[in-house]
Amino acid sequence: MATTSDTTPSKRYGSVIKLKPECYAKYKELHAKVWPEVLDRLTKSNIRNYSIYFHKETGLLFAYLEYIGKNFEADWQAIADDPKTKEWWKINCPLQEPFNWTDPKPLYEGGKGDWFTPMEELFHDGHSAVKFL
Image (cartoon, rainbow, N blue to C red):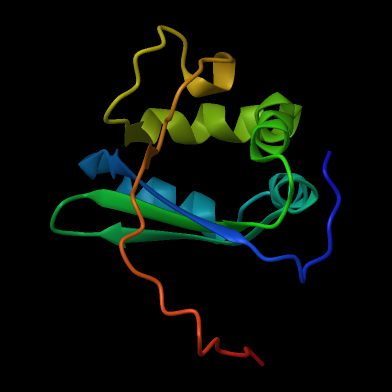
């Protein structure tokens, strides 16, 4: 696991996936109470400010996170290898429809690829950062 300070400059990631229409209520309920072990693993893997937004008209989930570590692939692999995260994904993945998943195995069974499709950042105004209370 990479270790770093919360003051290390971060890299921002945005990604998108479809939520099955009939699964909105369940997905929202699950994410109102994300398991502490899953959140702890994200923190240990240098993920900060992880947010998921839902667009009702298109059924899209937009995920945003900031990464403050030095080796994203290794830190993400630690997340993917975590037993509690795999259990969480096993519940959540069937609620989603990935755009470009080609692995025959689902994410929670060790499938490889981008479950959430990465997005290109086109703009960021970082010169006037907000300090949260």
